[in-house]
Length: 195
Figure (cartoon, rainbow, N blue to C red):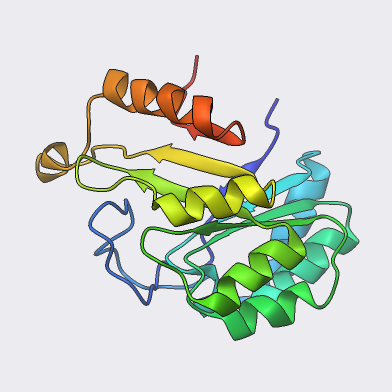
């Protein structure tokens, strides 16, 4: 039985992160007039978890309509954002949707407004770990001090070029285990496949 779907309403993004699996893909977007059909399909199939990814989901002009319709139909919504569109993020959060969780990818130092939103609304923090990128020490302390869930994400290697950036899985897990000793709110995220 399917618990959730990952949904990409747009692949457009306002960043070009070297580790992102959707970099360079066409920027088409899901038609607004199909949102109701999507929600009906989820309900009929008893799928009550919708994981919204991108690109950058806040570039999708109908995101609020999608979230509103999903949550009104008892569907839990998770959004993964790069956190650059703090005004749109704050606007969505101000609606107080009961079944909405948001994770913010922080891979460089964020601005004050984003940290305030994370603290106020208990947003999750996520960082993709690569050979060249580890979590920022100040963000780790921020997450620890405010008891914010912090997810370290394993970079999937999709191309030969990605292998230069992605670390071996055992190194990723060693890194996570070392960090968990100092920061207990850290959890690893990696593809578990179909097993």
